[in-house]
Length: 246
Image (tube, rainbow, N blue to C red):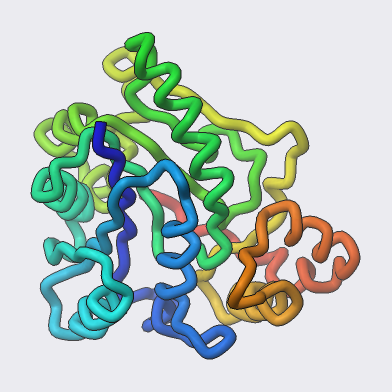
């Protein structure tokens, strides 16, 4: 079973254009995301899925620099971008990561893949995420699904938001797909560690300035400890509302 992480990335962003190439600790955000996903022990391959737009040439150059594969497809039909990236790279299991998550945690990714594969062997899972019922901070989002589920969504999804956001057709149809959640034992969903606004950038930059070490990864639990010691950090972006799917 080939397990492929597909990281969607583009320079266009309505709230914070070029956010994936913003610099934190001398490296662009996309490099931090890729390096953290590379630390997974369960993932077999990593693909950066970007668009065919000229402005996204820089993301292709970054993928080449980081020695990861890339796929270029539709800007707005991100579902098709995922489908063709997965198909081209013979993915059996797809791990969906977004490039606005520079503190994505490889331990959480691996724990989720392990649980997914256990259920998969029992023919009891098509899709799993830690976002259906949120207990993790926003910015640690991981979705895992079978290629067959992705293909069915690609064929059947007919609403624009289902095409743009990749997985709604799957998790909105539990009568078709076997859906599983992944929860933390403590609810930290009020924290926001995703990158969508300048306030988010300040929070993530503060986390990196405190915890980043090029020779050692920091993890979800390290950030929680830091944030609890410095509650003022979370105040910076606590009023930012997440964009709605529709």
